[in-house]
Figure 1: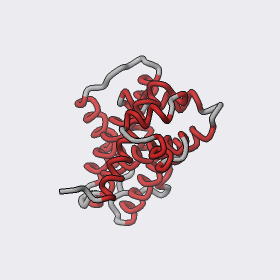
Figure 2: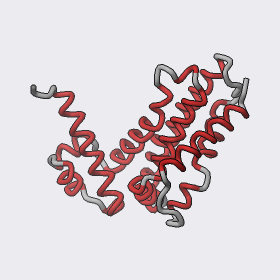
Figure 3: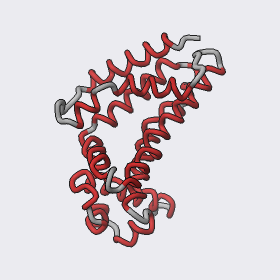
Figure 4: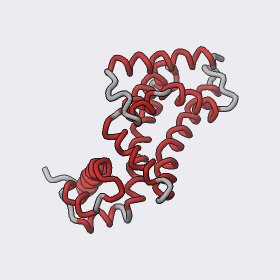
Length: 202
């Protein structure tokens, strides 16, 4: 059966973003749109039609990761199982920030933040800021339901995310650590969620 136009566009979008992540992680902002298009299997014009600039590609990549990280907050069970929900959120967040490709991409953004401030701003606003706001909205819902007590949900969201990431991301960025076993990530995610829920118990 032929795919619908919307499905084809979605596949092209994902292919472009995957290619952009790979090429930018390898070459930084020197990555060419030609190379991104070649790896995505599309024309350069298609890349420009979907994303008009490298800044918009970075924004889209950050937004995609934020969507992946916050997906556990949108499940049917999320509103009555805060420990399980926050554990899932923490697991995806840690996996994302410790992924080698993600680390390389983050290094690229930091390296270009001074010369190309739009890159850093796009990555922060679409990525970290969006995911924190979504987490804060979830914590506000749980507070309203009486399952948590977070008088300042955004501050609590920053506290939780910071506790989850800790120094692990910095160590990866500096090359001090090069891998984290899935069981380590699971343990860290569970402990962070349990400690947070105890600290903000209603």
